[in-house]
Length: 61
Image (cartoon, rainbow, N blue to C red; front, side, top):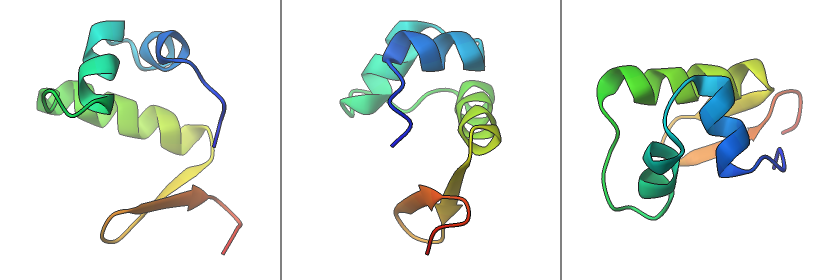
């Protein structure tokens, strides 16, 4: 949706790339502060988290 690499998200969220990679493939759930940092980074970039299991770009329905 944003076209970011794992490295780009990790750098923007100030987490390890391995944290992003493990989360993407379902190997583990990041600790709370890393998960919050990734979510806030994505929200600042325009991602809206929907109730349930969904996301969209802000301003799109």
